[in-house]
Length: 177
Image (cartoon, rainbow, N blue to C red; front, top):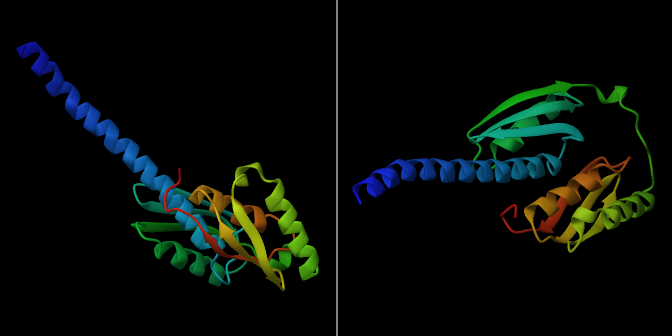
């Protein structure tokens, strides 16, 4: 009996460490999703080429933005997300004059975004619609089954050439599962 207790006393701390590690990983995943949503829906920030990494509440931003103002706005948006402990902003400024602009009518853009959302297998079961488009700014509405689907919808809309910004009224549960 004593040997069993000794063995259990060795296993319990290891088990607790493993559970804490899994919880931290899930927390970082959720934090990363929330940070991406904040970036993708912040007015005045074009983040089609921005990556977000998280570790223990610390967020690292990588990629390119069009101006120093966008770089600061991106950092500010991520800092406002609940659970973010720190932000390391490694974004590079690449002037928008270097990027090729695609100009489509709002109706054409709405059709292209609607098609993109409809063909994305990740969005199966989601009820996301393009509510409006104004001068390249797309407003999404509806609901998703997961926060990951909400992020996928925003990223998918943002990936359509000609989209300047994506705003979201999409409702989603707070978990990533």
